[in-house]
Image (cartoon, rainbow, N blue to C red; front, side, top):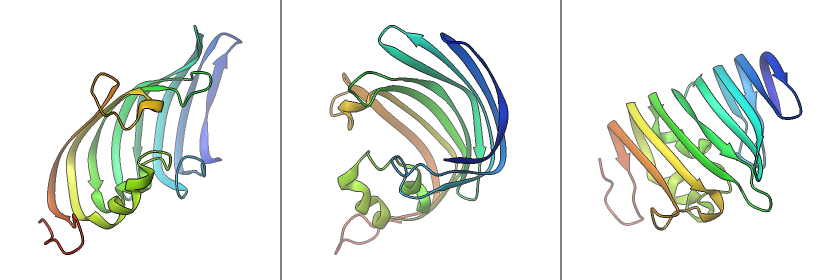
Length: 171
């Protein structure tokens, strides 16, 4: 569920738009995230349209902030019958605490890698993170760039990575 949001909807059976703002809002989506997400601020413009093959969402001017991060993103998500859909998402973070990164990774993604992320990301902050995720989510993790891509570039300060047991930490 969602709490702490307000906005307006304009639409019909073919397409529409949603403008949302929120303060001290929350997202409780147990099929997507391991725990509820709290947001100090959120603004978003979402458009939807029925395209060939299914519903498409277009995310514009999405901005958010909370204790862990602040940033913006935009992109599209296309629902595809009998699949996880297709995504093309681009964003940047102007503030991020790496220790809580795993909280924002959907539970259906990197299922086997979640314990590693939880243990390995010990410390670090960034004020410059840029990312892009593109491809059919059924193909994730994208083994070849032909099926999709995940691209993350971050300037991290104070970073500590505990790569593996009995290995020295990377600082």
